[in-house]
Length: 319
Image (cartoon, rainbow, N blue to C red; front, side):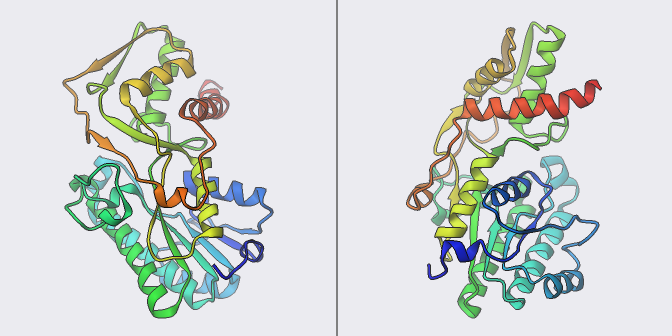
């Protein structure tokens, strides 16, 4: 890559979606590196509004962009508001990428999701399995919008020479995660349940499924460091998977969660409930070739997250 590392950290960097799990972690890491950051709340800048986005880029002239903003939600939200998911995410990608190119941004990092890959993709999933089979129907609207963002980055690179890269993270967790009982993902959901079971002295915690489904998890701070490593070292149109390279069964995850939270009761698996996809892992050979390795093990990452949960979520509920 022609642009030096130092040059890429000069000038203001716009973090789109800085209040989200990923955007906040990237902002923290860039702050540690001494970068100057530009952030805007949704109230200050609606990224689905093309005129507002163009005006922002014309006025602020960021040197680089991390596009972590997205409309996200679980299975129920995707099923209830499919039009919102595809429309808003298409608008965000289109508006930001186009305005960034027109404003002379040096480099843009587009952040997607592993849900872009086919539902039955070979495991672990390589970057070249994109568009080789049907998507998971429950989140296809979000996935299609993210795929369109990837293709837009590639098209703008080819036609305009715009330096845009696309990164696809695995399942993320960490400080700032969503711990609400209804909408949380597996790690924050289990963490809250094991924590509350310990406080209540519950004799058992019931976990959905057989416990045999396998998942890959990455601490969001590691994801942020990987994203910045790609920003500094990678400049190509091919997407890059961001993962830990390590899988665990849900049974193993539950045992770790009990250990981290101090829960001593029984863990029961309800096999009448669905396991979901048997396995969902990313091939991270391309990321490894850039010299990046995660710093958190799953246990140390869960312990870090639990400390944050106790200090910020559990204490707030008790206060």
